[in-house]
Length: 308
Ligand code: NAI
Image (cartoon, rainbow, N blue to C red; front, side, top):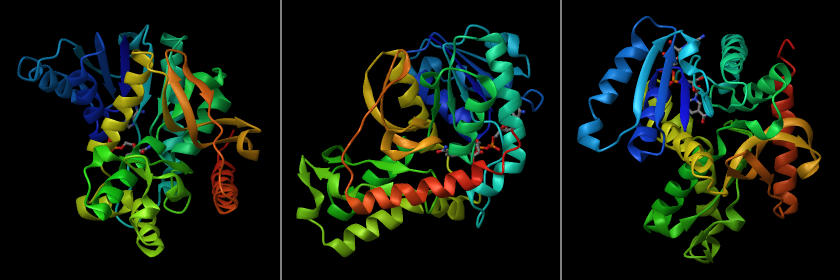
């Protein structure tokens, strides 16, 4: 398995590190436009190999896409992150141009690749990759829900004072502060609904804390987070590399599923060697259906800003 990560910044490097530590990829290429930056990150990471016990070869390059040739999975993290007080949607002007050029260059050298889009506004960037590359929909995956769900589980474990491994929960919808839909009714602790342990008010607070999870970190760090985003991407890549057939919420092109069409938004999918192998239909409550509709409307508004 060969993986290319475009963008050697905070998220790209963290993603490369987790992929290497999990030791399922033979080669990880990191590409950036900043002269020497990807080479430096790759060298630094390679010098952790004997310490962390991995055999993946990590290669860095400044803009040489021929090094990415034959990649099974390509991850796009290039672009600007938000600063405190900014929304993800405000990044569209700069990031759309970057994501369009980068995806075209990746496909030129790896026509059979699966692309994972991370750059924000992620649902709209995933839609842009669909509209501009012509790749089949199973090979274009937007990463947002896997991260948001991890943040949801963190908040649930905190509220329940329980180990995170006891908790299950999922966040669907758009990857934005207002668009995320933490599915509180389906969240469980050791398979028991969390509503058995938490009051409605506390559960609503967990959902709200989850939705602003990224903004909370941006305020603390002065820029957006990288450990959990990198780990979330590495989990998706691993599910593909190891053909795990594992369910994650991912942004994917919908064609009638969940009553939505011509939009990329977070829904549960099965990830395996072919990328998105199935969109999973789960029963949403009427309130959750309404939230999904509103979330989709907001994503569509951002999509309309694209110059396609
Ligand atoms: P960063 O600024 O640390 O890194 C971005 C890197 O992209 C920089 O090294 C820059 O030189 C590079 N770059 C810019 N244009 C490029 C091009 N044309 N070709 C190759 N490389 C290029 O930013 P960070 O924190 O790594 O975030 C990256 C993106 O990921 C942002 O858009 C951020 O909003 C998004 N993000 C998305 C998440 C998600 O859940 N989908 C979670 C966290 C961040």
